[in-house]
Image (cartoon, rainbow, N blue to C red; front, side, top):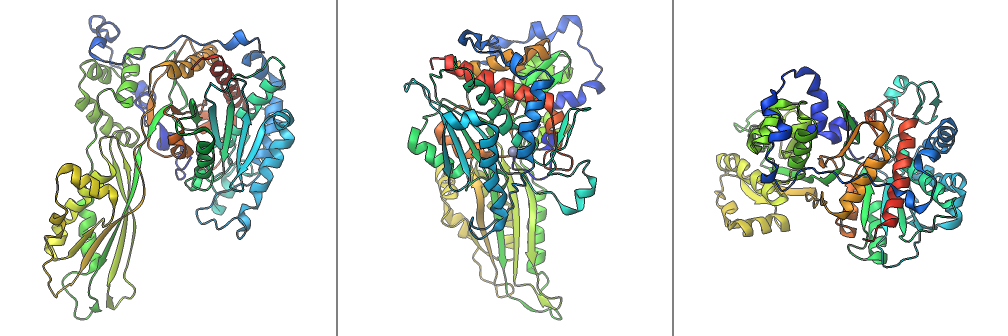
Length: 576
Ligand SMILES: [Zn+2]
């Protein structure tokens, strides 16, 4: 997924339950029998209780069971042989990739459809296969009932680069796809993120189509983008337009993409932690333009000094953490309190009392992962200015990256930036040009009844600096809508999880969460209200994505195939 060399816990989890896993051993406090939270939680005061649907067994269709198909050494050997040639393709997404025809670094992507064709011959006989925008791959297995909306399962073909300097720290070369039967790991860049899902999805479908009893009623679509690690505009972005033309807005019943915090065990409970929304995104660029001069007779402050003051203002005013009532994070905490009440007794009590301010305080001080799940982040990532040691700089640029939590918006973040620069604008009599022509900013001011003339109140022209501060937005995306965490579609998703993984723990709980990073699913928002970002694996397989020694555990890869196999069948039987 599109985060930079952070492991999955840092990039995704940030969930209270993941937090509980980290901290459960250090917290020995026990609640007394009289205040057992299981009994005393005042669930009637919540709309959400984290009730779990029944495990959903798809066996009524008469097909082989996922356990029979994907368990055992023969099944593992087949998965290894399918996965290896895919992982051996260095389909790397570089941020500066040029046009398809001009940049030879696209070359490896030509191999992906060829390998898939050789590996999955039955799918290639039966499915309709479309190539979208050069390398996007869409496989459609048509159902017999056109009244049923299709389901869309997505993955991405591209991987992040391997840094040359890290090569000697890899146990096995990153594109050898070496399998070690002793520990059950297949090693390589992309072995986990995200080619594991291509292999699992294709294996599930190959198994379905090889049985004559599989006569799908509902169409199944696989869409494999090719630049997710570079924001996904050329791949998933174009695939989404193609699918929207074909099926219309909201024409897909459910979308399953990578993400979430996977499967995590806490005591005797296995938690499945899908992300039901993604935080928003905003880059803000600050330009200060002033009169230059010779540094032997400097002004008291230079543009670099002014910009430094802005940085200090920003960093001394972090955003507020907040958990909104009945939000997915609140719901995830309710699940944790209900099913693992002794994991973090303090937090259980806070949730019991419905004190979300205290819960927010708790999470924001626990770890950066939990903090930024509930708080908009700001990171001063980029600065440039000054050309020559004896010249006063005339131009300085600053770039600040934000990931927006649901309580904030693009407009509110922009307005906050304007307010925080006010002091510097006044102090140096700068002309302020704030987000000119930016619709998000304009709409926010209108909604809040703020006159945009306020921004222009400080044009006191002083010859000392004769400066301008310009604020503009770079890349941006809104916080995504939240997928419902109840109702028939959630019940099929959660019921399938509870069926497929029933053997893995005495209790399986599906609990909602969020993502601090973005996936290809951001391009598919118009196609469905139901998007689950969830890779059915644990940290064993997802702990090293985007870093050295990426690997996938074959037992987990087979579990992924089992889940997709059951998920497709359960949706085929559902009349929704
Ligand atoms: Zn990914």
